[in-house]
Structures are given as structure tokens and as C-alpha cells.
Length: 166
Image (cartoon, rainbow, N blue to C red; front, side, top):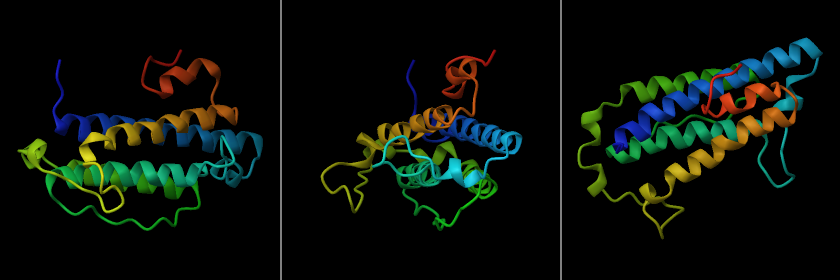
């Protein structure tokens, strides 16, 4: 089974962003139940040299909208990285999802022939590595939330979309 760039850039990313939004809901509930300041989780890092959770979510949003935009030959919308709460991060995810919905399959016509060179990655076309970067960013989010004991261990595989939660 083959996938089109449209499916990879829009449909799979839409599902992933919805899952990330659900993880944020779990984190909000966790903080409320245990009376933990949400900044503790928002600033959580798996390792000292990693970005905090808030920045990781901003990057997932940026990569998603940039991927869709650049593969269709459009300029990506700019969202300032000013979010400091889970509610603001959910709004950013909702904005990103709304943007993705505006992109049509016809917009991806001939995108495999379009060379997209990013200013900071002059050595590689974007298509070669954007999906790997995006999914690497995304893969850390459930781990980070699990690391903070937000979700029960039996829900952890479902956070990746592998299986349904029990």
C-alpha cells in the first residue's frame, strides 16, 4: 500500500495532532487531581539538553504546517511561540488543524518534483527528512507525559496510535 504526500502531510498528521491534544487533556486532569502547577509538566524535559514540553509541542505544530505549506508551494502561516499554558497549546493545535483542513489534495499536484530547500538545511531537500523529524518530535511527547506519571502504563501504547487503550 502506498501513501501520497497529501496523506502523509495532512491525514496522518491530523490524527497525530488529535492524539497530542488528548494527551494534553490527560495532563490537565492529572495536574488538577494532584494539585500540581501545570508549569511543572510544561517545563518537563526527558534529558537536560532537550527542549521543554511546551517548546516540543510548538515544534510539532510548526513542522506540521510547514510541511503542508512547503510541499504545496505556499508560505506557511507564522504562529508566535508565546504559549505558556496547556489551554494555549490546545488552541495552537486547533489552529494548526484548521490550517491543515484548508489544504486540498489538488494542492499537492507535482509536489514530488518540487524541490524545497530550507534556509537552515541547504544540504538536503525537505521531503527527505521532514517526516522523520516530525515523528521524532512527536514520539517524545507521550514518553515525556508517561515519564511524569500522567498516563497509566496500559494507555501508553495507545498514545502512539498503535492500539486502543484498555
